[in-house]
Length: 168
Image (cartoon, rainbow, N blue to C red; front, side, top):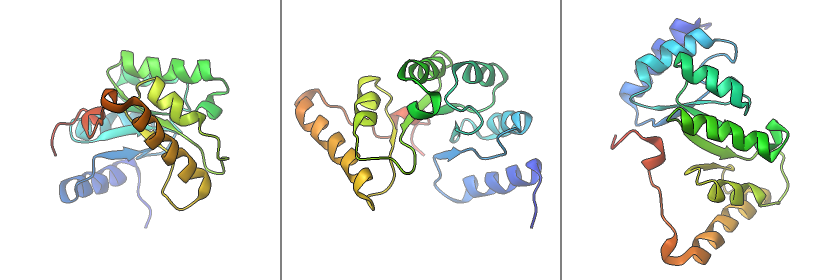
């Protein structure tokens, strides 16, 4: 079955009403700015709507999307942005808009754990590195646990707070 933007939006809204979904990444096509704006207007108070392919870790795109109401969170991939400075600028643009931010690794990464330090150091509140199925992902999760241990009582578990959606 083929769905247009409105049809896909209708289906997703049905899922949001039926299932305990709190975050949706790239719910519509990466070039469907108007569809994302409409979807965010309809569902943005119920769910985190994350722009990945739509925003491509680009501060200008985040700022423009925020101004038009398309999305309410950004996926920050430092190796997509090209530099750590550009990735941080995208995260800062999201924060300036009152958005959530998820610092994310990319598929096919190594066991380097820098991404975890960026997420914690920037206070992103959310980290996306995949499931516990592969060694490069486990390295990152284990580093997050080591950081938590090193911080001791200063460590805070954010829980659902970064989603800004209250209890759902």
